[in-house]
Image 1 (tube, rainbow, N blue to C red):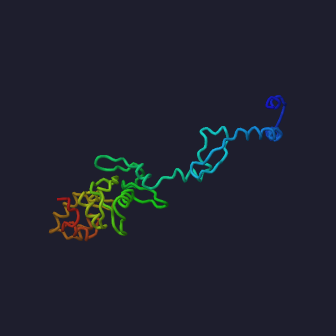
Image 2: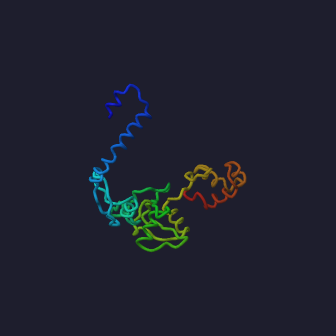
Image 3: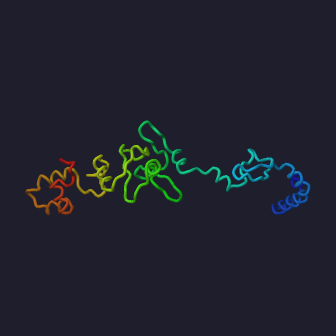
Amino acid sequence: MIDQLITTPVLSAKRVRLYLFTNFVASSTTACGIMFAFMITSQCFHCARVFHTRWRSIPPRKYCGPTCYRKANIRSPIERFLIKVDKTPSCWIWTGSTNPHGYGQIWIGRRLILAHRFAYEHYIAPIDTGLCCLHSCDNPGCVNPAHLRLGTQHENGVDAASRARMPRGTKHHASKLTPEKVRITRKEAGKTPQRILAERFNVAQQTISEITMHKTWRHII
């Protein structure tokens, strides 16, 4: 059939497709009996339904359709969680996706939650609304429930500040001063009015007052 097409002087692509389709239909009556003889009868691993598959399916199909495949291969949340955990002698390191702050995150249903909060709720107890899950190991990527404890937002901030994890000084995104300017401010506090110092360094007078009373920039001596 192909040789006949090749020897034909000029045939459009449309005529070639029509010729092949006509010959296929003509031979389908004989071919159907041969194809049916090579069908394989299988039983679905999930619903036990009997179905037929082609003999050319390598490897043979285990499921009757995509629905049974998804139901049989779906993993529970804790299974998906443990797949992405690298357990070391101390911390459980999260190897999945993380947020910009380094905390692991995992999809549970249609909610994206923090991985360490999921670990606490699964291994210890549910977390009440308004409470934070604090790390005792100071490792945001750790999901070891033994390293987690509950606390309020204030306790979380105090804990972060005590571990020097809060941005301060020139590391803060809104900082306008430098350590040198802070030292000058404290040195001239009793001689120069705070208003003048505030205008010189382009800050509010309250900022100068908090610096002189060591309420801010306390790490600068």
